Image (cartoon, rainbow, N blue to C red; front, side, top):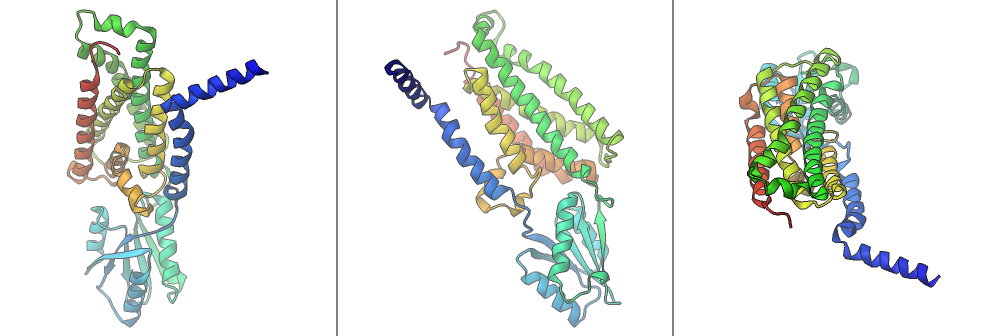
Length: 347
């Protein structure tokens, strides 16, 4: 019994001395509770609403006032025609348009790229305007008139798969060389260390590109997801995102010393933020302010947003310039830090 107790104490001390283990044991439950408690929300908040004022009377004004006083909707503009309202939605300046008609009926024009949120927006709008009969409200879904969920999830799955495949597999591959001791042999060879890193990343770059083509083909020919925008820009932005993921994988490989640690870091740094904070499943706008700031540091958010605009909405590259700029910034940051930390001799 004394020997058994000694082994238990020894193992306990070993765990307490390992900072990474302590972080996983106590840090992950706290992070998961916060994310699942605040990020996973289907509440509707701050829906950007534009009102068409081509026809207006007391009843219309009361309905608009009721909508403006609601915590769910924010009136961002008033325009004179439905065409102007549609342009605001297509340019991503509004989510929903309220269009009154002279016969007393209404039309709700909604951004349907995310069918789940579109349904909630229309439902909340109908409930808020309680004095209007539901049968007198018609709906017009832009971008996704059939309300198919694949339109929303395909770009999100692309962002998750490319990030996990490139970053996780690259980091594990390099760390595996460290564990086997073969990395030292490579680094003392005549080949420059930078060439070693690039050579390790190139196969995953090619693999990710092939996977991208497979995903796009399945999305279009199997799931009937349209490719409304330029295929060239869809592929170009995706290649930039793949380079970002590879750079992040190199950075993780500099921190991790074992494949297990690399796998755990990849799961904590990549999987949870991608699923929770990228807008893949839950709208970022409905999250608390602090999580919205954190979500701004999650690169897949910008890629998923760009793919939804390019693939589903069919916008030009200028409409996703902000997303491309953020992806470029993250790529440059991760790559420069990774190369700086990559020493020619392993510690």
